[in-house]
Length: 476
Ligand code: NAD
Image 1: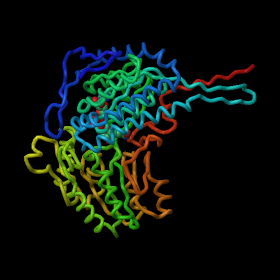
Image 2 (image 1 turned 45 degrees about the horizontal axis):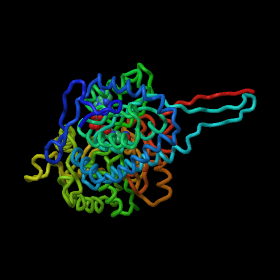
Image 3 (image 1 turned 90 degrees about the vertical axis):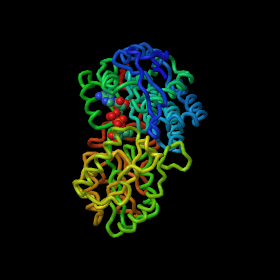
Image 4 (image 1 turned 120 degrees about the vertical axis):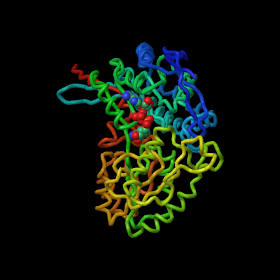
């Protein structure tokens, strides 16, 4: 595959390519150009030239292209989902959902475009005032590998609808689906230069996007450390930033919770996408009065998860996406094991057998009795491993839940109105669920507090994140 710059499919300036591997088999799925700083500069130039005409169109005309693209994406879901599973590893059903999610998000921005009219105020003594909203210019969209299609849509949807032009940088281990989606957006009518995609390493392509003074905003999703580097690189040009960073979401299961439903909540919340979701359940706090029953049922359910190649029928959890991620999860589990931090009740290792030898597999893992200062609670565990601790009641649960540098999502499982009122008020998070975890519809603002990030994506005000306001006071 190639990169799209100024409407042309190109190789990189270096002429080099990098291979993308299937994490279930190790086979090569495809290749993408190894872009560098010069490729980003060409894309910035193209995006700058395209900005005038694109920003002059009405929001509705711009969003129409997204709407047409969404229809085509839905039509080609089967092929796109297969490509996503091949490069990312997730079960095909999850890939189908993600591709549909991409289309949902573009359609949402199409709907939102109709309401984009600026503001009018009639202020006594100051005259008639209008607030014009203008696009920012060239925006950078830096995307991780865990949910590449959804996160791409969260960024390009509002950026393009608001009238900006974009340089998109996918992650090295999952760029191919993003390239295909860019191709479909081009076919749907995006003019040359409006959306450019540059593939390659974060240290060159990503950093040039963050540094380049002509890029007026960077929307980045990835790890906390990388986000901090992006902020430092973007600081000299004082550009706008949206940083969607890591999470270590707590899930609190109270003594009145519906246990079977909460068990299913963990299965989806922790093991969806092999645990590689920013808002996955990463710490479980269960009331001690129900802990034995809860853990017994949960263990049985976890042991029924079918691990394997995401393309195979019946598989409900695929491999991890990349070797570095697997190594990190293994290191975290080993550190807990070596430090006697809790008991591994199931999993804790790679599955055995020929079918797993070439892939990046790890069994779904539950660890009970984990001390509160364990690495498993302190660090983000980006894989299928769940540390569990028991709590006496809500005070202790909320204290522990909030005792984290992260603040992305959190959930509480109860039917008590008092508990819901307190937990939703006190949990330090950008999103709080009650009796569910993980779902993020495009209508709700999404983002983190504390080290989990700055700014919000989605929601009715998402376009404003990609616009600048200009107040005009008219006295006649
Ligand atoms: P990562 O930080 O390694 O990489 C993310 C992207 O940034 C990739 O495209 C990468 O190539 C690029 N990059 C790397 N170094 C860069 C640099 N110096 N400058 C600019 N770009 C650079 O993250 P990852 O491993 O791909 O993703 C997993 C992380 O993302 C987890 O921590 C997860 O919690 C987080 N995440 C957060 C959200 C959210 O919305 N808050 C959503 C999904 C994932």
